[in-house]
Length: 170
Length: 188
Figure (tube, each protein chain N blue to C red):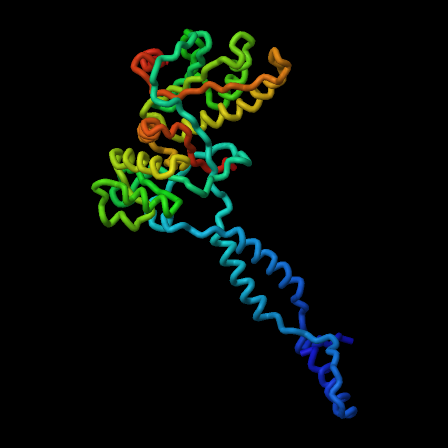
């Protein structure tokens, strides 16, 4: 005798464990998600950072930090300095103190600068808040000259302790 | 749905008694499909937009602008050169520079820093050509930082005169590659 295949009508699966685990993962990813800052969304280039051995205590500080980015601009394909400040009040003050500052830069979070402007920016940042931390975020393929020049400007403005931004070595 | 049957029984009971009793729902089922749908949608969104590898930082301190010249004994000097083509050389004191592979640098730094006569006094000076790549420089700094943990461990094992463990004093400087250095490492 052949078994008759029963057709199950209106069967129900208990989805509770599925919902449990999904919610757990969802809340995890929601809380760990960090949204792009405005400066990052204005950015038109990608920095391939050099890698270094991961150190537990070396997370990127997210308060009162000024980042000097050195990257290849996608529009001109030239290497250029970019300056970015995280603290909004400080940024408004520093931008306001600049001489001959292009007006279209005023409401930008990340600006393209030359060495002369960078020097002035570092000086003003130091004057507004002396404890601001500086970080150099540069592409690993760049000639060291670019970084050495930025370091020289930091040294000139007596910001002798700063950070290099790197990616974790896998 | 499965819940339908049980609800029906409840209702018929209520009809008989006439009085409205506080009903107790037994085994009722909630259709969770829409909930699961939307939760999965959000979950996939957050999963794909999250980047796990946050950048980290490497702290660096450079000497301030030179006000007065510091006297340095040649024997306490350990120099590392980085040439245009990213090749690394090292020289101890007044010795001639020798080429070194990046992966051997850590062992070398540990060995040199723990030499009994210059222990804790050795000055590491990193001289980098303007044409060298930034990635190489970071790799070298990373290796030197890694060497530091063993050096610190060895030095703190010893005690000073007062009986306290000795403190590691790291002396490090970064400098541009000079003409004379280029001449020294040029033909190697």
